[in-house]
Structures are given as C-alpha cells and as structure tokens.
Length: 350
Image (tube, rainbow, N blue to C red):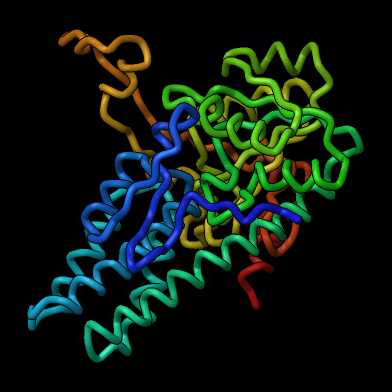
C-alpha cells in the first residue's frame, strides 16, 4: 500500500504547509489563514513542484473566500479577483498554477455570496488535491512498465510526494517500480542551487528505504559512462504541445548526456502540466530568480557589487531528446524524431 503523505493539508479551516526549505534538518509545518501568505509560501519556495503549487493555490483561493465571508466588503468579487491575481503572480512558469486558478474561477462563477464561494472553493481544492494523488498513482503504474528488471535510474530535482499531492510523478514512477521489485538503484542529482535533490529527494528515498546514491550534478556524464543507467526520469513544470518540456535547470543538460550515452529519457507529469496553447518550448517563459539565492550557495556574505549573475530556475528540453512522456492517461513514445503531437493530442481530444 502506497503512502498518502502530502506536504499540503487542510485542518481546522487553515492551510498547513510543510516548509521544504528546512528539510532534511527540520520538519516544520506553517499554518496559513490568508491568501497573501499562501502566495508568499509559493514564491518563497516553502512549497514547490508544479502540482503542489497548483494545489496550494487552490487552497489559497479557499482562504480568500473564507476571509471574504468574514468581512463586510460589498465588492467581494473585486477583492477576490485581486487575490486571484496575487496568487497567479507567485510563480510564472508552472502551468498547474494557472490551470488550478482557472478551475477555481469556473467553479466560483455560480457563487451568490462569499460564504457560498468558500464552500465551493474548499470542496474544489480538496477535489484537485485528491485527483492529483490518484493521477500520480496512475503515472507510477504507466512509467514503471517501461523499466527493465533491476533498473538503475537517474533523477533530477524533487518530483515526489513533496512536489505533488502525494506519491509523486517521476519519483512516483520510481516508488512504484520499487514496490513491484523492478528497481535496483536510484541516483539523485543534488540539483543546484537549492539542492532539492539532496535535501528532498534523498529525504523521501531514505524515508522508504529505497536504495539511493547522491551525486553532484556535474557527475552525471561520468555516471552514464561508467555505470549501467537504464533511464533518466524527470518531472515537468510545463510541456508544450509538441513535447518540448520545461523542468528544473539542468534537465536539458541531462537529456543531452543521455542521448550521447544511449540512456533512455522519460518525462513523467500529469496532463495538467501540458499546455496545448503553446506550440513549442520556445514560447515557455523561463523564470529567473533573485541573485542572492545563487550567491548564498557559496557564501553568507553580501554578493560583490560588480558580480553578474545568471540564475534561471528552468530550462527547456527539446522533444527530440525525450523518449517517453508519461501521464495519468498513458505513455506517449517518441517516433525516433521526438514527435509526440498525435499521442499528446489524443489525450485532449475526448
């Protein structure tokens, strides 16, 4: 039986979030009652991972409605729209954020009062949360079916329960494969500069006694050359209609290395991550974060004034470097030229 652990929980009409910035040293939960604090939790990376961001934002809308139900603001819809905009600005790359907010807006159209809006919003946020968990279980089943027996895999960033509503996407594939006895070993990149791999992925793997090895990001090429790696398995923050995929910075490098060493490359993500309005990855906005967090990986002192920084959070992996895209609806395999158009379109044609 798979664990239903989630870093997001609703309790006593409050949103509780596990502060992932403090892992693995401390397990601290913060209680949120206002949408403004929820937006900060997303932008400050207390919560991270595209699915988890979407779920958190949905609960943030519920908090906004709850506060409006307590107020005497006659223009409650105007205030709600401002709260929605604030949540939308918290992370611009994760398509799940906008998908969740659009879904919440659709549900709230019929609300005649803030109290009714709160009931509708909370029910919908809980539904989004549970749906994500079930989708991750399905992704795990589909993705693990591609792995050989005794598979050795490499993963990047964190795509487990901490990044989702539970179980995980890429790490969910790994978790399911381990449960089936199909997995031999997991290699996890540190994932600089926030170290989501060493702080979070390793925390999850050790928590479930899955055999794992932590390595520096720059060791990936040597690993592929000297060890038998069957698959690189990563998640996605946004997938364009043609299969180009935006994911944590360093993913593109891994895809290039995998191609050079004959290692298969899998993207595992829910269909909510696919943006059919984007024809290619060239249209994906790449978020750049403040320079200080990059410098703090080297020093706690202030950064030198004349030093320039390049701190993109994501990069885009072209479809021709991806062998399989796995969602809760099935597996889209590359035709050898990195073309997924037909397979991906089928998922949205029903």
